[in-house]
Length: 174
Image 1 (cartoon, rainbow, N blue to C red):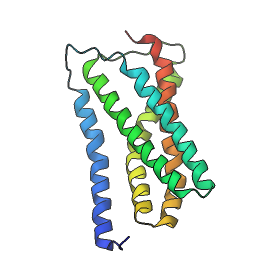
Image 2: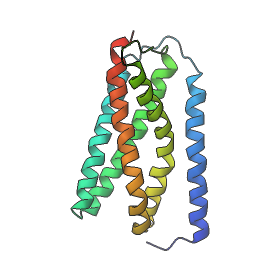
Image 3: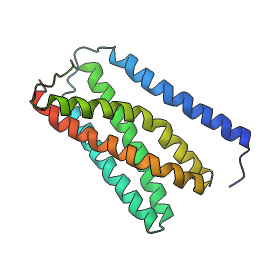
Image 4: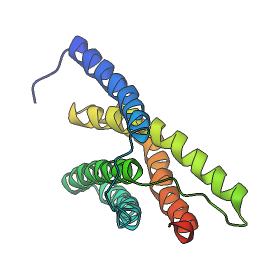
């Protein structure tokens, strides 16, 4: 691969940070849009399953790189990114077409702690994933490894906590 200039890398990082701001803002705006007449009640178990698959893929990718299988690791990480995007699309579509579901369980404190940490870290993980991927793409593996040690547990937490939040709230879907 041809060496990319520091200026180009800086531009790519600015693009990543811009995207990392735009995505949550667009999601928040779309949550305010309500499309009537669509039954998307089938989506929550699908996007929760996608979160579970993402968690499994992340663990498999970690195992692959520990075994020095860089090609498998790369493919699994790309698949994890695709899964995360599929989750986001399903999640947004569901919330644009459905009324909010209220959690009414006894473990409300736990539920809201998980939900709030999940939301905050799901926003945080966007630039982490993209910059970590950029470093790998550029062949800057030392920087990639260093950032991946932060990105991996955050991303895994987001994927797993998303499944737990779904399991906790699923009895209250209308």
